[in-house]
Figure 1 (cartoon, each protein chain N blue to C red):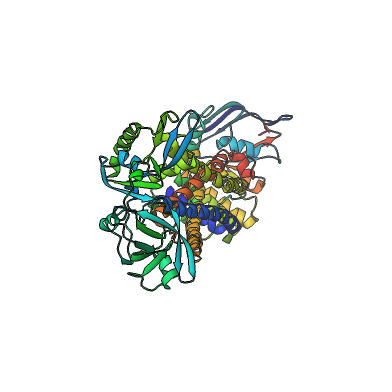
Figure 2: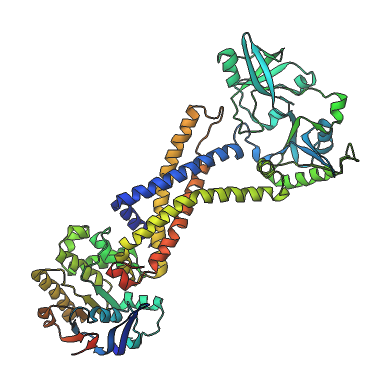
Length: 412
Length: 221
């Protein structure tokens, strides 16, 4: 029966060209936008070089102190990090690096403002940059606070015309730094790895060693994803024991060691939902996707309903010859799903073209959006869901047609 | 085979009540070829729809092949239509998007029959009506008479006990009409299929075993 429904679906589509074209246009445009959006989200959330271990990376990027009349929030300082993230059970590596800052780079007459970070040596072991030249600075470089720098390919092009940069000097804020490594340009959507320049974090001063607040970010690499809840629980326990600098003003200290999605959820929801933030965000994404699909789905529902009269005779004949209602519904839903899946495949091609254009014009510098198998699978799933969603009501209506009226030509 | 006892059919809308059939009493035996005649609007098609289980009587009792039909669920009526009945319509009602062969297979889709067996039976039915050379054509590529022959093949592919034909020659010229009547006669004589046919044409009515006449929803003969 499924084979027959598929066969009939393709025949109906081939014969009713106008309906097919109009329906496909709406479906293709909607799904191509959804697929492109999925590709962007995939770029942010899915592990990819140099964040290939993203599924095992947890980030700590804020400390909040809360009191009856005051709240202060900032990046953590080394003092807070030392008390909370050193030697956490289940953690393979820990790294500390600075929030993105702007460096003024000089090259003769050229002056450029570029994003830069200070990072420790462990940073390069947690992230997996594929070095085009040289390699990362080491723990020894960091301990000695050497003036070395890793740059991106983009910076190499700007400063050295794309020629080899290893060993050359870059003036950062008036201080010369020797290039020890060149990495591919990283898009800003990869929030942990993004920067144009990296210099060693360097040793902390006495004051910095004790500070709760600072301008740092810490990442930990879990031994396995299964260890993440345990790591987070232990971290939370440690946070609850961190002494508050000013207990008269602040009563509570808060922080979080989040996966990427948890961090995004916390930021987007302004931490209003706590641990339920990721669930709320998932529901939010789903709601937006559903809302976006609603208009074309309703359009398709309307088109399908208008076709009921056209196909009333066929429904009447099938019912006369004993078609059960569920089989009629199944047939028409399959027809609709075939249409939307074809639209999904066309949307995939259109989304591919769109994203290729984005890549070609370097729409988001360094970002490379691709439609991998995961995005394709999601796209097809969305298309099939769209087909069922927009087909079920017209199919149900069709199945309820009175056969006598249907054979006469159609009232519902 | 088919028994109607005191059958009424009333159509009700908000304002109007129409008595389409009144006190119909009818017995059609197994293997009969019966025609139903009467002026337009007298209830012929309504009667055929009731016998074909496409509609339900307002009052009265209907028995088909020994089974009492009143109050039966839609699902069991659909099953009975699939197993015991075949339909031939004045306007053929072939699915234009399907080939002749696919059209004839339609009744078999709702039985537990594999695709190879379905195909075999459909080809046999088409051969019976002389259309083996047109199996991959579409209905719009056939003449009226050929389309009606496809419709007959579709009606008989499931080997029903009863074929109901609603003015099967109504849209055909006399030569094609004769051809169609010939096929129906052969079905009745050779296979013993009970045929109930609505017709306006006295010539064709005379070729049947018995004629039931209706006038204003009542049986007059």
